[in-house]
Structure formats: C-alpha cells, structure tokens
Amino acid sequence: MVGTPEVDHARQHLIDVLRAELGAGLIDTYLKPGLDVWARVSPDAWCRAAEVCRDKLHMRYFCFLSAVDWLPSPFGKSEDGVSRTGDEVRALTAANLAEGLDHGYCGGDTRFQLIARLHSVTTHLGIHLKMDVSDSDLTAPSWIRAFAGANWHEREVHEMFGIVFTGHPNMANLYLPGDFVGHPLRKDFPLLAREVKPWPGLVDVEPMPGEPAGEEDGEVSGEEA
Amino acid sequence: MNTLTERQKLAYIAGQAAEARINVELETEGMTLNIGPQHPATHGTLRVVAKLDGEQVVSANPVMGYMHRGYEKLTEVRTYPQVTTLVNRIDWLGSFANEVPFILAAEQLMEVEAPPRAQWIRTILFELSRIANVALFLGDMGVQLGAITPVFYAFRDREYVLNLIESATGGRFHPNFDRIGGIKDDLPKGWIEETRGVMVKVRRFCDELEELILGNPIFAARTRGVGVIPGETALHYGLSGANLRASGVDWDLRRDGASPLAWNQVDWKVWTHPDGDSFARYWVRLQETREASYIVEKLLDGLPSGPIMAKVPRIIKVPQGEAWVSTENPLGEMGYYVVSKGDLGPFRVKIRSASFNNISIVPWVLKGVYVPDIITILASLYFILGDIDR
Image (tube, rainbow over all chains, first blue to last red; front, side):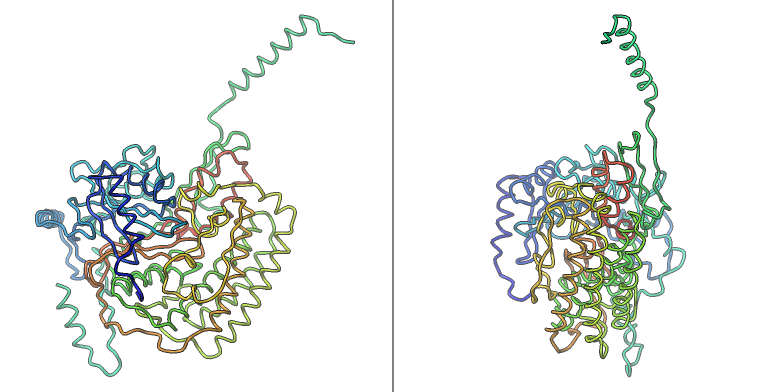
C-alpha cells in the first residue's frame, strides 16, 4: 500500500473507545495501519462489544459472523494420498491440541474462535471482533438482539462448527440436512472426496518454456513437509 | 319506517355470534405454500415455505442448501491460484468480480501490488461483469410481473458484453483471468474499439427498458410501496449493494473502500433512492448499469500502458497473517476473510457473499405481504443461488 501511515489515529480511536467501554472485557487488539483492526473480547463482553460498536462507533452495518478452527488439519492437504483411520486422526488431533495451537492476530486460548466484522457506512471504518469459544461446552452468546442479520450466520456456524448460540430462537440447520452427523468445517472432518481420490492438481506449477521441469517439483515437495 | 323488534335484534346478535364462532372454528393452522425448490420464479433452487392466512403471508422461511458446494472447505485443500477457479462459480453471472477480492486479499498478505495497467483492466472487466449480471435482472424482473418482452432484450444485449469478456479472457462465464500480481493476458487487438461500441448499445438497452418498464403503470402498481425496507433495518441485516442504496443509504465500496482498483481515478456517480421498495431497487440497478457503461468508457480513455504482471515468485506462498478484502460486486458486498499460515494454500477462507445477507431479510420483509407480491419482492432483492449457498 502506497502512503500507508505509520500511526492510524482513526483506527486507534476505535480501540480506545472499546477499551474505555469494555475494560477488562477487551483482551487484545491488533492494528494494521491504514488497513484494518482486530479486537479479541471475552465471552462476557461479546454482546456488549457489538452494542458499543453499533451505538458508539457508528458501525450499524453487520458484515459477517463466522468461526475459525485453529487445529492444524490432521489430513494435511490430502497431497500424499494416504488415508488415515479414525484412530490415527484422533491421535494426531490430540497431539496437535497438546502441542498448543498457533492462533492468528490477537492470539487465543481455545480451539474455536468466533470472528465477526462490523462496518460503518458513515466513517467507512470496520472492525473484526474475535471471541474464544470455551472448549468444554462450545457455547457463545447470540448477537441477534444487537443485529438481526446475525441469525443465519449463527445457524451456519452452528451446523458447520458445532457451536451453540445461547439466546438464538432457532438453531436448526441452514444448509445441511436435518439429520446430518458431524460439523463439516471442523478440521478433523474429512473431505471425503479427497479420501476417495487424491487431488491431482495440488502442485499446479508448469515449467516455463525452455526450462527443465525437474527442479520445480523437487522444490515444492521439499517445502511441503 | 321499519324499526327492529327486540326479537329481531336478538336474532341479529345471535347470527353474528354464530358467524364469529364458525370463523374461529374454521381457523386452522393456515395454508402452507411451498414455492420451489423447482419454480420458475426462484432463480435456481431457493425454496420458500410460506404460511398463509388467506392471501396474506403469516411467515415465510427460505430453505437453502440444495446447491451448497462447500467452497469454504474446498479452499483448504487448494493452492492460492487454484481458489480463483472455485470462487468463479459463486455468483456465476458476474464471475470475474468474484475473483478480484480474493486475489486482492492474497496480494495484501504478500505485499504485492499489481501494476496500474492490470488494475485498470481488472476494473474494466469488473464493470463488464456488473453489466452482464444486472442486465439479466433488468429483463427478468419483467418476467416476474408477466411481461415477457424485456428479457429478450436483456439476453440480446447481454450477449454483446459476454462476447467482450470472452474475447479478452477466453471464458464467457468463468474467466479465471485474475492472477496474484496482475492478470493473465493483455487485452486483444481491437478490443477497446469494440467495447466502446457495445457500451453505446448497453445505454440504448437501458433507455429501452426505462421506457418499457419504469413508465409502465402496471409495473408501478405492482412495485411501488411493495416490500419496503427501511435503511436502518437493511443495515442491521447486512444488506449491501443496490438493495441498500435503494433504501437511501449512500454507501458504495467502489467509492468508499480503499481499493487499489481504478474506480477512484475516474468520475462517476453513486445512485441512491429514498423509497426502499421494489421499484426503488429496480430503478437503482437500472441507473447503475448505465453508470457502469460510462465508467468503462472513462477507464478505456485513461487506460495506462505498461506491464500487466508484477514480479511474483513462481510458487506462490502467502506469508502468515489474516486479511479481509471486499469489493462492491454486482450483487453487493463480496468479501473474503483469508487466514494464512504461510503455506501454498489458505488455512481458512470465510466467503462473505452478498446474496446470503440480502436474502436473510426475506422472513422479515415477506411478513404480511400478499401472495403475488412474494414473487416481485424476491425478484427485486435479486439473488443468485450460488451466491447464497456457496
């Protein structure tokens, strides 16, 4: 980005207001000057954070709400064509969890994190809010009272990740059939198409004209450990 | 003079009571009307289950998932360049516009910027996708109201635009033309002149429809004051694009977003309408299509020369980080939240598609309307099924 300021006063102001309103409920923040801002809030402050953004920061536009499963996929990218049994997947998952997960901006303590974005159509600034979802009960407070549009997004998160939203009137599946077993966007949910047939196009690097093809392949497989 | 006797009065009251009792006894759960999944008015496989009381809708719930393809899961086993092939298929009428925000998100994480010529050509193709996409809506809205003619005009003139996209990218529907760091090819010879000619045709098409549809009293009667969405409600549901601007909210990411694309380099106007009804949504889209043709012409006038690809490594690895990029797509705000762990492919991609939010207001807006208006309101909200189900 050309001309990105080193200090972003407008976005820093968002963080300051959130800190003043939420106090200890605001756990961590991350600011990319000129681009975006992230804030991680505690589950208790999740609904309050939405209201503060809506009422104090003019962010009345609800953009999206989703979740991230920070577990590294036990299946990799299915590049090796090896299919793993359920026990192997469970062992790998447990080992990954014991090792500690590598969270993104603002850190995290749990496997699942909610992430939502609100935006202001007047100041043209947006914010990403994150929340840790407790590993033991996988529940989160619903945003429906603050933003009616959160309804379907929360239903989607519920079926895809298995996170239950308290205060949501209808946690029925949105896309999946009613009797579907499993939560497809969890990392330990296998992509069955890849189990049946390995993806042939994982490395799509074609050799340039006049260059030998061999070295490219070597480089990729070496890095893809 | 005929005064009622006491007996007559009592008989009248008894009759009223009996009628009321019958009404109460006949009050069943109401009728359930199933629209779709296969229905000409559903544009794909959106199913709406409407509970009716007579002609009035008591509650309406869209049932989705008939076309869910799991793109968010599939992106996790793809490399970055391969993802564009997938996301092409989200909003299949404006395919090129789907690729752009994802590529921009990857470029933002890699701190790569495409050269100016590539950005301008991206913007031109983006606007052509918009015309190809919205032109179909402009014609199709007539079909929903019983006017068959406009859709033929729409298909006829949309074809010119699709031919342009095809001759530049090689694909009529799924160009897969955007690359991290630039675009695949430069424009073919003679393309610019051809495009100018087509833009004149697009404007003539808009004029025709303005006379055919907007001036039509039946169209006005069926759409004016129908399906009104106030601006504040629209914001809370996350409506975007023309649906939001038709509710009087003056917000367009092309003008208000920090995009490296070339919209800010030319003069153009954001159209809004204060009414928030079906008519306003149609009117705004019609103006936007015409405006898009002007934007394309102005971009062609100022098209810079130079390279079309920045220097990027052959094997694209995106550094660790998170990025959110959204653009003003034909259907509204389309964005990608990309989480990268420094691999060849993304760790997680959240696809924020416009139609998903736009349609989430359907239970709210359909409550209390009459059955024939279900179709016009759904049509005026304008969704693409692939953009809802992803």
